[in-house]
Image 1: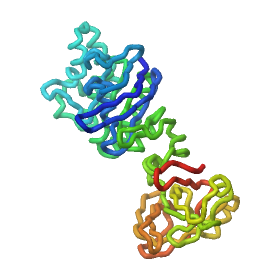
Image 2 (image 1 turned 90 degrees about the vertical axis):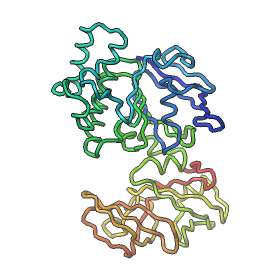
Image 3 (image 1 turned 90 degrees about the horizontal axis):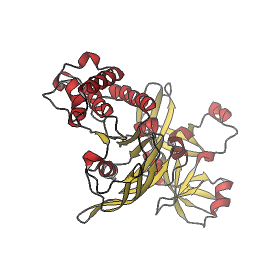
Length: 369
């Protein structure tokens, strides 16, 4: 096992910069997730660590060894791909053993490792089957087993669950987390799925356009996003963004008056007419009802009116997408499962101003808190 360190790593393809000035260090044994929208550079970083891409500039270390010029086969890392990459003519046992056989490991050791890995992944009864006789989840576990059997210094996983159905993805995600707790091998996992990132990671690296936006523990990134991009990417449903102007005392949000908390006014000292973006998460928006007001009487609340556009029943809760009148701004609102609304209904909402974010409308940087 080993730590992984990138120092100002850059990767260019002709005139296109895929990743720019990537710097971080993953301690030995931790599980880090690289997350971001398509094209943000997360897979390029993973492939660069694996040795499948060449570092244009900067330094890349696995343990204490700089590996910029070391071939992929000598880096002692194991990579699991999105498409499994199993050998169709080999059995499950042969697929798991393949990497060990290529390294001339003793046959007895290979047999022991194959059986150990098969037991840990519940594959013992499938060892004689070919990949075409397996389900997608079983094939993914075989690909994981092949990587685990090698006992590498680092695991690299490139969107390994994206081809699985929802239930199987949830189950396999839990198995992955348990396996990491048992193996304690440094793991780097790439995904565009923020739920996977939040549930699996010791630390998350949020990327956009080839650059790091924020690194931190999942809950810290969720509650303290560095900028608007991070705030809207992590969270399901995402954070609501409301373009606003400061009127001298309050906020003007698409013609509606929203109270400006004293703490915000004192901290930022806005000028009248100044524009910016307000952010608030769906769980911090409440229906304006007497019972709700009693429940949240100690919170500083502000009101907004929206028109219901879409209602999405989700079982234990209902997600409402409501538009501000005379505006293209849409708010995501979470309510109880027993609340019934229809498109066209007008809702009076209360926003928890203690949970309000303020972002620079031009740069997206967080201004408050």
